[in-house]
Amino acid sequence: MIPDVSQALAWLEKHPQALQGIQRGLERETLRVNADGTLATTGHPPALGSALTHKWITTDFAEALLEFITPVDGDIEHMLTFMRDVHRYTARQLGDERMWPLSMPCYIAPRSGY
Image 1: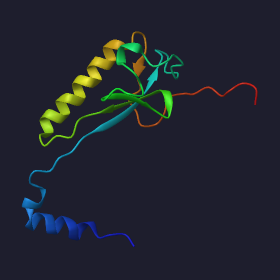
Image 2 (image 1 turned 30 degrees about the horizontal axis):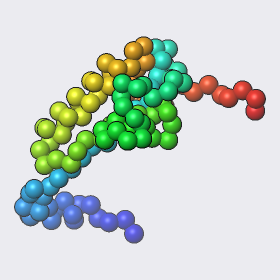
Image 3 (image 1 turned 180 degrees about the horizontal axis):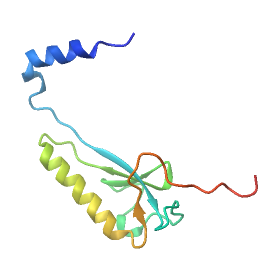
Image 4 (image 1 turned 180 degrees about the vertical axis):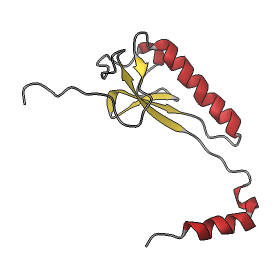
């Protein structure tokens, strides 16, 4: 059964204190692509630290799939600033590569030999 979201929202309107002190974090995933929009086949850039142990910049499912993570924070502006800074730092480290801006993936050429 699908919960009635309107009932939950109505309850929150009557009880705004329920959200006081809420902590949240962000995750953002993006593909590394070449200037022509094709998937980057290079390894994880060393300037971004270890893909498996870096606290804020990791890979997810594929070498070209970057994942940015913010620390849990009670201040939305601080959290967004942190994400912006991680994003900007990464963009400066990618050389000729770019970060794909859309949720649909970039063009991925079919594998040969099938």
